[in-house]
Length: 358
Image 1 (tube, rainbow, N blue to C red):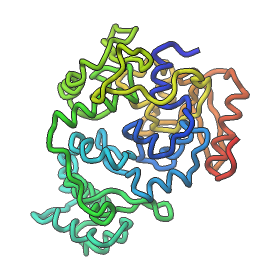
Image 2: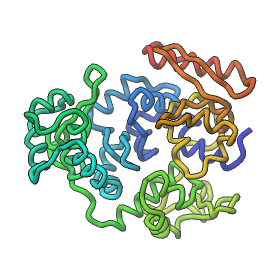
Image 3: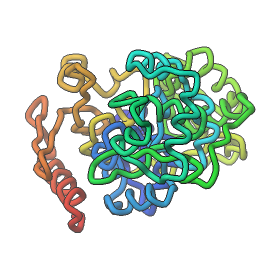
């Protein structure tokens, strides 16, 4: 059985699969779902819902309810549309983008105007289509970095895939207007602490800094803005902070405090197949609670690769892979709950194929 800390985090991450949540509601709760690899991101929804389908996630994306953007750590994530103004106000950063543009030989004082004109009024464009419109000013990855520059200024997001390829779209085309970022930094920081803790408590400012890519001092300031709402977790050696239990009338969160997630910790899963880059792995600075150091290289083999996870009671007990709809398990040791793993593998196959889920 998972210990209390793992159990709380499994539930905060919706890995107990509370019923009735759509794709947009899951993203809204989790705040951001890493989506640099879209197939892995889709499987993150499957791990958290017994009923959601690929079609439902794609429909939420097409409907602009969830949006693929450069978010925490400068990495592509799905974020709920309502959270874009305040979250991106904190996490956007053009330093790396400008450096990469220079490395790609994309130069000029008119770069923002250039990409603005190329995107405006066109709807979602593939990289090749956008490259044509840029008429030689940028090619290859230089095109993507130009879009990232536009995104920093609230002018671009990624549209839905087209035949498996990313598309890029002007925010005025996609939302009807460019993004207007939250101007009050403390307002955004307080919301960041509230929302991060709702999906990750118990946690520390170090965890928030690692997840968001913000400096540790900024993460501490965010926690400080909601300190009156929080209490120490039972395992407080690292000053873990958590959200008060909703069932206790004397600690019921007010409107400006983090609220516990849907459902309780009952039914925390014995086994779950989580995808590569899952938030359960990347959501905290310290992974020793869920990953034995002996197996770190199996999960993080290097070269920016992260392998999908076999989770048993919240502990990483192996990795898995897929080729098409075929699922291959690679446990670190002889696995227990063989029936549970077989059911999870069958559910992955059904989810990917569009068949009824078991």
